[in-house]
Length: 331
Image 1 (spheres, one colour):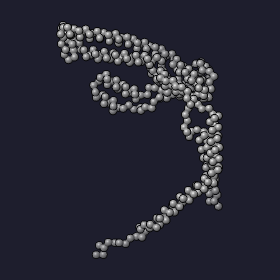
Image 2 (cartoon, helix red, strand yellow):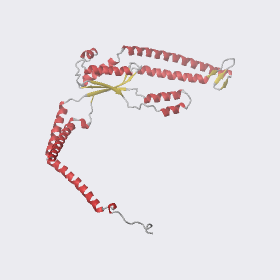
Image 3 (cartoon, helix red, strand yellow):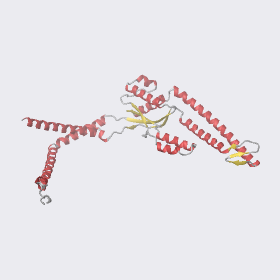
Image 4 (cartoon, rainbow, N blue to C red):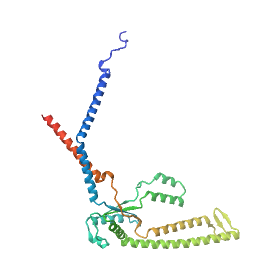
């Protein structure tokens, strides 16, 4: 019977002493309050020093901003043609290397003189931030439709939209007039490559010949469709499954003729666009005007220098405090 009776004996160590808990919490809050007071007293004691450092740093930063000239920048948006992207990046690297080496012979040869090369810099990169991965799920969905020219055009458009075709060439310089003139002469030099100049001429000649051939074929198709339509109306031909059948003559796929005509029209339109765009190896889409290079707010001297001075003061104070505590421990 004794074994079945519940045991009500509890270990005193398992009981929670709320009084001790409140005391520990109060001690923690007191320590935090004392720490805050020490910090307040420290800042109050050194307020004049900190204020003086802030004023001194602001004055120095303002003076440096007045003395130091800001860089100017011109952005040129370009589009490489005829697979000239690698050439574009290589020639920009070449020009930047010559500017860094202050190769006046090279720049004089392309008509650039009396330039302060300490400030000059040229960079290149993609003009748009794009995702490298094409939306494959969307393209796979398009493949489920008929293999028509409309779907092909949509797929081509999506791939081009996902690809970065335009690039930004940035010129940095000090003098606005000289820098802008140098940028224009450099772009002329970039497009003076003999290989791409000849290739562009050949490509444009082929495009013009293709346009002429397409126009001749379109005229022949129009004449052929017109003749057979007239014969169909006068001789009573039969129409069966999109074909025109005339007496003692072969059948003609009228739908195929219209599709072929549409293909030739689209090809002609594309060739005209290419002739307009590909006049040079590197097409200039936009040639910007000089503008001042914008810096981040915390990167300006008027903010940076006071922050550095105040930070050094705190580091020195911490060093002194640690040194004093170390001396007390040794005693």
